[in-house]
Image 1 (spheres, each protein chain N blue to C red):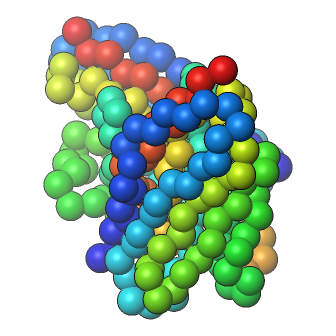
Image 2: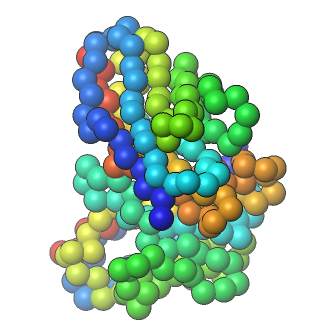
Image 3: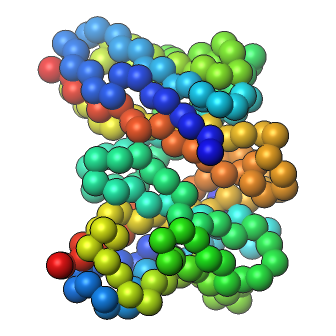
Length: 114
Length: 120
């Protein structure tokens, strides 16, 4: 079965710092990869996704993620964070040839200091 | 974009009563919806996959008689927590996929805002 591991449970950064959140998955077949974000008091929103093609994907609000197949990784990055990026970030994987399910990581709580 | 509405957003009930939570896709038809449970400071745990017109598929360890799922139409799935107990208190979230989207996009799940259930 697929699983997703997020290395950082809680990250605290100052505004303008660079961000990288780690995500590794375990599944040997074709995968779809996602990063979802949950702002305080709001529902989960899709930040970006990878299905195929260019392994460097760009999402909303200046976020990007790179799929490295050999490392089973899909790390999320942003060159300069803002206070409004304070949220919880979830990495998720779906195996399209297997079933409809999306498996989520445990999430990373990001706190940006103004 | 695709919108999923969940109702109610918060419910408090007495132990032993049943609670129904609704999940609606507002601007698309969803043949498949998903129900998750989220514990504080933890990830989303998939409870079941709700299939329109057929029985839901439950994940291992989830009691199907406890968590009744009905997906009677292409825009509505309901989760009923039967004979709720304090340990059922949690945040329940639904999501839906739009099967009309192309290729991988049909795997994107759109989430409702969640329902906080508190059982006294």
